[in-house]
Amino acid sequence: MPIPIAIALGGAAGSLARYAVATWVGARVHVGGAGTFAVNIIGALAIGLVLGTVESRFPATPRWVTLGLTTGILGGFTTFSAFAYDAVGHVEAGNPTQAAVYVAGTVVLGIAAAAGGLALGRSL
Image (tube, rainbow, N blue to C red):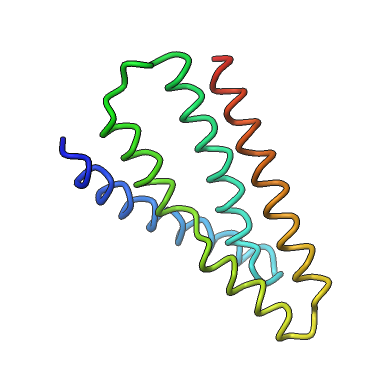
């Protein structure tokens, strides 16, 4: 399969998954940006898990598969633009502390999730 097609199809699937997860989380956690926070942490864990697994168990995986999963699905699933918008929303609502916790939490937990997923994927 051509790489651009794999990425495009994956991106469509990831975007739909992001909408579903963010909507589901947002309906249950009534804090601005909770859905975006969830998809970004899940996506960070998933990219580490996918790449760690491919690297350690399936090194001959075709590039279109790896890019379709990571750049496509997970790129469509996670979102920096919504993360930035949510952070600004907290500030504009007069909650700069909540904005700082949201930003720091997303960055720190996202990196930890990616590292954990990578370690887990490599150990499988």
